[in-house]
Image 1 (cartoon, helix red, strand yellow):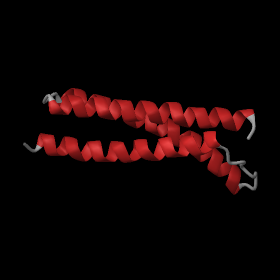
Image 2 (cartoon, rainbow, N blue to C red):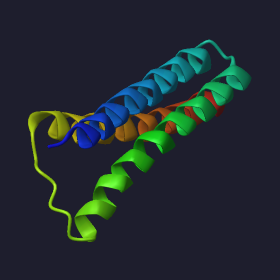
Image 3 (cartoon, helix red, strand yellow):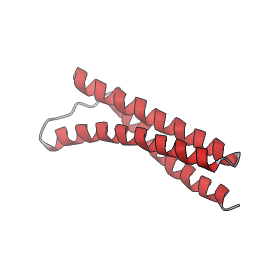
Length: 102
């Protein structure tokens, strides 16, 4: 993997980590009944998730255009990080809805 793809992998890791952190902060705010703050944090989470997804899409477009992508531990880690943060965000949104319905 070249330096550009390493940078893309790190971009995915950093932004998906931010997305996950903001989502968990939103959950904490919802637990405390601060739903307006929770929504702001979910919006920040979404921005970070979109940045991570955009970086992932760059790799997918390269592969689709015939540019073979080498797979290394950094790339695998970035994909794992993105998928777990996406799952956490989806579940946290549902949990927040449950808190709101109390």
